[in-house]
Amino acid sequence: MMTNQALFSALALEKLAMWVILFLIVVVAAFNIVSTLVMVVVDRTREIGILKSMGMTNHRILHVFMLQGVWIGVIGTSIGTLLGCTLAWVLDTYEIIQIPPDVYFVDRLPVALHLFDVVLIFMARVGVAFAATIYPAYQASRLEPVEAIRHE
Amino acid sequence: MSSPSDRLHRADEAGPRADEAGQVPLEARNLRKHFLSGDGSELKILQGVDLRVGTGEVVAIVGASGVGKSTLLHLLGALDRPTEGEVLVGGHDLSEMDQEARAGVRNRDIGFVFQFHHLLRDFTAQENVAFPCRIGGASEGASRDRARALLDSVGLSHRRGHLPTQLSGGEQQRVAVARALANSPLILLADEPSGNLDASTSGELHELLFRLREEKGTSMVLVTHNLDLAGQADRILELRDGVLHNDVNGDPSEADALEGEESGG
Image (cartoon, rainbow over all chains, first blue to last red; front, side, top):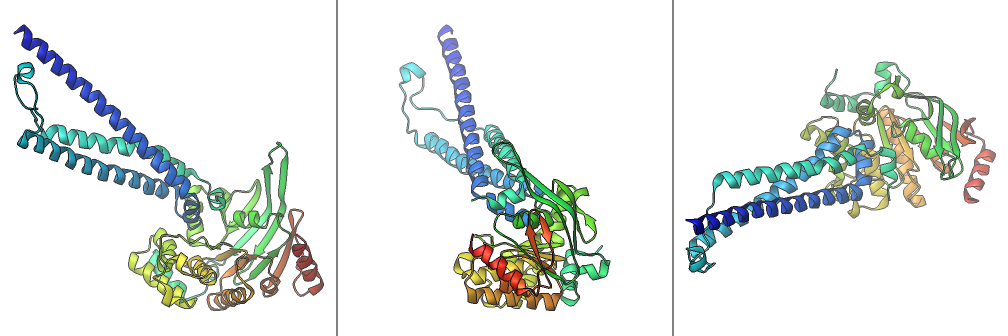
C-alpha cells in the first residue's frame, strides 16, 4: 500500500509537471503569435495607411488583425489537436511504447483520451491566441494614417 | 440619409454632392502646421494657409520641394491634424470630429491620388477600386459594379482582373484615380499624380483627370511640379514661406520661374 501511495504521488507530480510544460508551450506559442502579428503590422504599415486614407476606421483595423490572430490560433490549435488525438489513438491501439512492468505494473504506456480535457485545452489555446492578438492589433489600429503612408 | 448603394447610383447620374448640399467642397482657414525638429526647435511648415475650392473647381498648388505641399494636402484630406486652423469639407469642420467621423469623411467626401499609386498589392485592379465602396458599407455586388464602371471610364476594363504588379505605371495610376472616385467624393486630392510617369503617360493621365472633372464635376486640388498639369487648372497657387501666394495662372514668366526653381533643386 505504501509502495502504491508513493507511485500515485509520483504520477500526480508528473501530471502536474506535464501541465506546467504544457502551459509553457502555450506561452511560447502565444509569444509566437504576438511576434508574427507585430511583424505583419510592420510589414503592412503602408497598407494600413492606405486603408485609413480610404476611410477604414481604427475599430475595423483592430478587428482585421484580431481576426487574423484568432484565425492563426484556431488553425494551429485544430492541427495540433488533430495530431495529438491521432498520436494518442496510435499509442493506445498499437501499444508502441513499452515500459518495464516490474516498475510500473503495466507493460505499455497507458493512454486515456478525455473529451473534456481535449475541449478544455482547445478552448484555452484559442483564448490565449485571442489574447495574444490584442497588443499588435491595437498597435495597428493606432497608426497615424499620414505616418503609415510615408512608411518605407 | 441615403444608403451607400444609393449614393453610388446617384453619383453616376448627377454632379457632386456639394451642389445638393449647397456647401463649399473644401475650405481651409488659417491653417498652421508645426513640427518639432531633432534638436528640439520648432519647424513652422505652414503659417496660415487660407484656401477655398469651389464646386467643380481645379486648383493646382506648386512650390519648391520641402515647402509643405504634401503636408498641406494631408491636412486638407483629414490624414493629419493641423497645429492651428480649420479645414471644412462640405461645410463640416474636421477639427470637431473624432477619429471615426474623420474616417467617414475620408471615405465619403475625399478621394486621394498619391504619387506612387499606393494600390494594395494583393488585390486586383477591380478589388482595389471596390475597396472604398466596401469600406463605406456598399454591398459586394454594388461595389463590384461600381468598380467595373469606373475602370471602364478610365479605359481599363480589360485589366480589371490584374494585380498592380501586372500593370504599367500609367495603368496603376489610372486605377488609383478610379479608386479615388469610387465613392464620388466632393473633392479629389492628388499629390504629384504624374510625378512618377514619363511625359507621354503623364499627358494621358492629365487628360483623364480633366475629362473626369468635365463628366463628374469633381473639385480637385492638385499638388504638382508639372507645369502642363498646373496650366490646365482653374487657379495656380504657389506655396512659399508657409503661405499660399497669389494666382500665377496665365503668367508664363512666373510659371517659368517656378520651373527653374524646381529644376534647380
